[in-house]
Amino acid sequence: MAPYSDDPDDNKMSLVEHLTELRQRLLYSVVAFLAAFFLCYAVAQSIYDFLMMPLARIMMEVGGSQRMIFTALTEAFFTYVKVAAFGAVVITFPMIATQIWLFIAPGLYKHEKKALLPFLLASPVLFLTGAALVYYLIMPLAWRFLLGFQTTGAETVLPIELEAKVGEYLGLVMKLILAFGISFQMPVALTLMARVGILGADTLAAGRKYAIVGVFVLAAVVTPPDVISQIGLALPLILLYEGSIWSCRLVERNRRRRMGEEDDGDDPDDDPDDDPDDDDDGPRRSRAPGKTTTAAPATSASGAAAAEAGKRHRPDTAADHDDMDPDDEDPDDEDDGPPDTDFNSGR
Image (cartoon, rainbow, N blue to C red):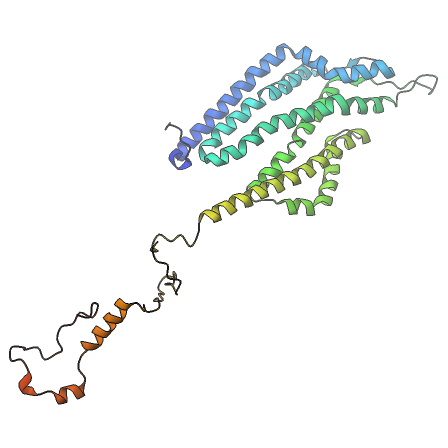
């Protein structure tokens, strides 16, 4: 592979080379995921305890069976497999993102790389922020609300207690963490689309009411059917949407400033063909192709002398030829026309 250059034109590759590069990046990502998977499977019990902790704490407060069950013979085994896969995705996300960046970086200019680098750093931070929000705030509130529907034998004919299946609970927890983490990538996606010109801040501001409705619909789909978790996802997304509008305005302002600087650098008066000593404020030649406009005639002394000399040496008229004596003609002059005259100099 050719050495890397900051100019994409120097990094041009054929289709086969692109496919080879893609295969290499995918191979690195798969190997990293498999290594992380086996590592997470070895500590799957610790990951299981971490994901189970919010429910265990709420059960200790409000009461309940305080146990998990599984009804299928293979459910416990596949639960640990899912836990290990979830841990592998979280661990290898930076590695996979790095491989994606290394694949697309040779096709970007230096200023484009600088523009994308902040978004690459912000993406994992936003993902972890969303995951921490749902784990430490949303899930305890939602579990306390849902466990409040339990009853004892004194309240109902038969007590109502939670007998949660381990596979269903962990699947719900992992779904919530991934949903919040991915949803928090909205500012990154919208700002990137504004940077390439697909969206604008005015468009986002005009569609705010539709975005709010869409956010609540998304929250209703990806969260459990309880008000707390739906509002817990919808409100941060609305705030992130407003932050995306501000970020898009900042991007557009920087673009206008950069274009203004480029326009200032291209001064139309700085024509390299103009004479720097020419202070004549008269009409100039048109720059349109195929159209030229001559400047006004000069009125200096040298110009007047040249004009007078041109008059003296212009071709004789018919009246002048009638007054001439044929005997005065020079016999050595065989040219019947007027004498040679340099009309540029007048001599």
